[in-house]
Amino acid sequence: MTTLAVIHCGQLVTLAGPSRPRIGPELRDLAIIPDGAMLIRDGRIAALGRTVEIPADAEVVDAGGRVVLPGFVDAHTHLVFAGNRASEFERRALGASYAEIAAAGGGIRSTVRSTREASEPALLSAARRHANWFLSGGTTTVEAKSGYGLSLDAELKILRTVRALGAEGRLRTVPTFLGAHEIPDEYRGRTEEYVKLVIHEMMPRVSEEGLAEYCDVFCEPNIFPVDVARAVLRAGQRLGLLARIHADQFSPDAGALLAAELGAATADHLECTTGAGLAALAGAGVQPVLLPGSVYALGSTRYPAARRMIDAGLAIVLATDFNPGSSPTASMPAVLSLASTHMRMTPAEAITAATVNPAWSLNRGNDLGSLEPGKLADFVIHDSEDYRELAYFFGREPAFAVYSAGSCVYKRGN
Ligand code: NIG
Ligand code: FE
Image (cartoon, protein in one colour):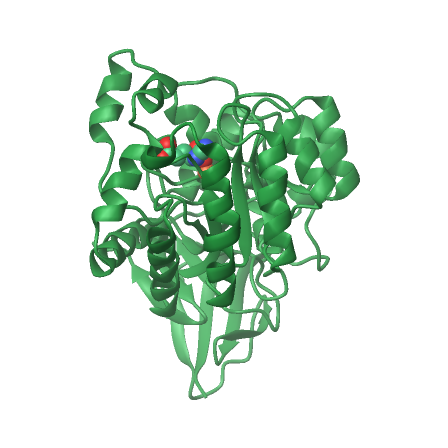
């Protein structure tokens, strides 16, 4: 039995509260214990308060007055890919648009080519490198999508890599199958045939091998229109894969309405969603996942309407959308900054949307997302005196030490 006592937490930000995602004014209640302490036994939180009784055999971690938070839960990432798109980034700086680059065979399809070529060990070492970026920002759990394979073997390779990374015990992973991310080169103009491959060959194997918990689709009129997206997600649901949807990133409402119709766990992006889409999400209890990193990195100013969503009673989530094209960041602190600066979310609302709410969206709410007795001890000591600094000082990674189930998995170098 190992026991850990974390003492001198200047602010112990627990997010203790009801066992469900937080909405409305609840988003501002972080349940902070000033100068708090926490006792951990065998990877789970045993007690926390102003003081805790420290057993003689406990290892003591002195937080030195710093802020302690639950590890961030990043509910939308494309963590596993090979290569990068720095040259497209440069072309965009010179005036080319994301859509033009994609239409000319770049974009997602370019990453598909490099990911198909990579061996499984090479992909795992790229994933480990990305995992360190997440950890250095204080993220301890990520949802990780496939979608840069787009063939049976390459999609399985990506999902096995997600599993292997999670099994290493540093960054927790929750896998999502995103075979319907783009039409690969060899199926251009043959969407229907490609979708058959996704539904009849990829999904059954993914489900048989237990390689995914969720199924996602890039739902856009010119990629996978709503009828196709519905067919893919329904096929996933029949196999026990719950739905998440890339919805309304470039065109309004069809994705949000589909998410509501199917009872999806989340509808992600929502930059173009109108009041009708929001009302449908609220009615169906779908959680919106907002991805301001992709709005920023695409040079757009069309941020999703976070305040309207909060007013509509939606249990909002913030995530990075980490990927090599539209959102090349693994930094949840960067996302908190964007949320406060461009979406008028308070730092407290943003932190709730980056911890407890995403944990529920990934069906991990009973174990992750807040610091409460019985939950897993996934926590981060941030080099900050006040939790608001995480959103306020932008462009730094504040994590000082990161713990997963009570074990230190990342420590900042000096
Ligand atoms: O979530 N929208 C589609 N997929 C990604 C972009 C992936 C890429 O550009 O490689 C997204 O923004
Ligand atoms: Fe995405």
